[in-house]
Length: 294
Figure 1: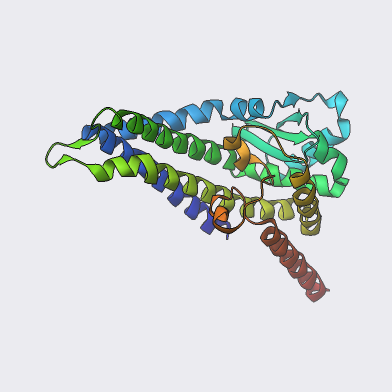
Figure 2 (figure 1 turned 60 degrees about the vertical axis):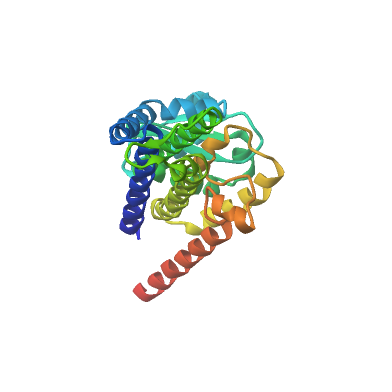
């Protein structure tokens, strides 16, 4: 399952980059746009690689937390990091009562995990451990970098569309030298490309969440704790919104915004009910395996 998710993520990232290259081609109107698109994809990926952690922490006003301020939390993070086989990340506290958590950083050696005041107050120790193990799995799998690149490339596609829509007010911007004005190119960049980019970005996020849930269960050996934590976070999170840049919401362990019907296409996370169902099935499988071994 983990290998399939990684292949799916790589394919979605490739498709997202392809949209950026195609968008630049339509914007310029000839083959030079392809080279510009490739350069934009490389530049945005490199920029997100360097600045993703600071952008995410700033978006939620996360403050660095010293060990003497929360020794129990630090001990949990250190113990789980050892089990996950990664360096201990920096720990940050988000000053909000909304219960949530996220991880960020370009690689395990330059990573951070942030928890809100609300999640510390809401969850039991076992539940908090399961949430932190989920976030450490994101770091181990380099999902934090994947999400940063996906969000930055999707933003670049949307920005190109805005440039084109502004230029279209004053005259043709996209022109195929062999065929004349290309109205499909205008429609593609203004409407279709940004929409497709958002859908792909959210699909990447949903794929990585399932993998992180599985990683949490492997690290803690307690899938029921994460199932219980997700149930609490889903209920209380909707009551106390998490303020911050919506572009960073894929990083959170649960999305505090509810999406139903057609809006479910724009989910940054899988349905919490589905995540809980998979964790309960995993717990049942572990129990059956233990009984068989006995």
